[in-house]
Image (cartoon, rainbow, N blue to C red):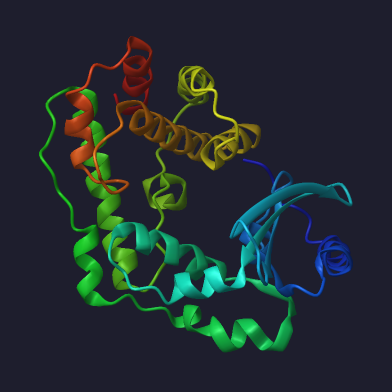
Length: 283
């Protein structure tokens, strides 16, 4: 794994100065730092993640990647009203929990660089001590019919373990993510050769889909490979494979990470290239 980035405060000082000079205008509500740099766990290849809250932004969420002082910045622009509506929305599905979790994770550990009229303190301080409504626990208590094929059985069992981690986070007021990468306790010890085999098989399928905008999970996998973090690379590639399989099989209305998906996928005719990648991932 890569060594931790030097804690030279000048790096963030320079980026903060740039952000105030270049991202602040009459529609800017807040600018704050999130992610590994905010937590102090960055590596040499870590992007500096910045969120900018804007008034009257359409589309509601936008992204821009740029190099500043030789550091890669990943800047996310969020509409103020969309953010507030999401935090205060009535939960009716697991999808709602995922959406709210995004902002709960933002404000768990962030460094505020600009905040007009104390917007974060006045409207989002609730995220600091977030508690989920116990009655909404039912949205993460899914089981489904166990599949029969060996690789689908393994995927199904992993899915159930992931849901158990959902329950733990739910009970502790923590954000819930559908990405395996966000659950370090589920990262396996895996050799480079197996990761690269899965990378080759998965990226073949991904490129066949001709996807215009690179998926976050693909970016995560490539960064982890660059850092020789084989565990993160492996689970990120499994996430890519999962979403590719959902895209290919087009399941009926079904929540992300519903274990029923694996029985559904098992009943579909899946190309040999898919089966090969899935067997690398789960056998």
